[in-house]
Length: 250
Image (cartoon, rainbow, N blue to C red; front, side):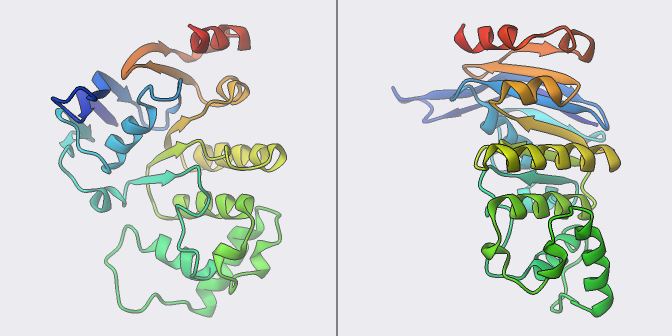
């Protein structure tokens, strides 16, 4: 579905402080594949997500999506098929806009924008029904600025909006890290459900070893900008928390 071919990215190139964030990485993500991306801080995980989303352009290599070269395609032009969930719950929403307004913007990601965002009664009724599936009571807060909701509520809504945009790829950069353990667990279960129901290709960055074992089929591990481990679903089932902890310590 989406392929990285010999992708590299450095920052401060040619200077003593040069950082080789991603080094000659080749990967192939299949349609509907759920992948965990792990590694110590500074290993290049977030840079790799930035390259996939279009926030960062690689210095070399190519990114192919369904046979089309999208290496130079801007982030906003990838929005119709790539959604991203950030660690900060506010990063994926417009905090001053209401819940309903945020959802309307999300549905327009893959369509031509119009001056009117069309907040009809029919639309509000439709999204209220969808939000009710979260069982968080947010369906009664459609006119509330989304910035007034709790972090867990915002992150849950961001996941729903990502699935409504029609995107086929979900990039998640530690979506539960800023939440308390109970809320974080709820968000992770919700993400897994949404990804499965929509057959999305998902890449999850996490430092949580429990989540590495419980979610995703494939496990990637980065170190100093290089992909040092690519664990298949079958191999992943045999891993223990001590195995993964050893990778971080090593």
